[in-house]
Length: 151
Image 1: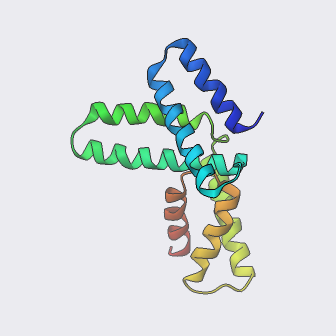
Image 2: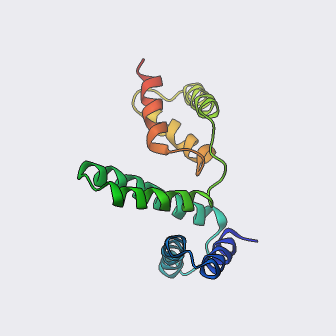
């Protein structure tokens, strides 16, 4: 069963359970998937659907930061609950050790390829985007890469 079909089944389950918070989050996700399919005029693969879920999680994390800064903890809690629902559709999260090992490997590979200067960051992040897609917060990974490149 594709990820898109799994999401559709979860929508049905949420409707049967009368879980309105979960249902609205899943419907919003379905709408984002459908919009992208219409825009690109093609059926999305599981990898593309995962990318949409990642983007939704990232948007909610940014919203949480803004809500907390504004003192709206109730709305921030609602966004956090939506993140929990969305994360069900992402691959298993990478452990900190796996992230550190992936960063070290990507840096070593970039340097072995003869990449110098600021281009190393781009080369490393491109490699990590493929290996850690959906398994780690790429903004945190980026910070770790910067620290590793500039000790």
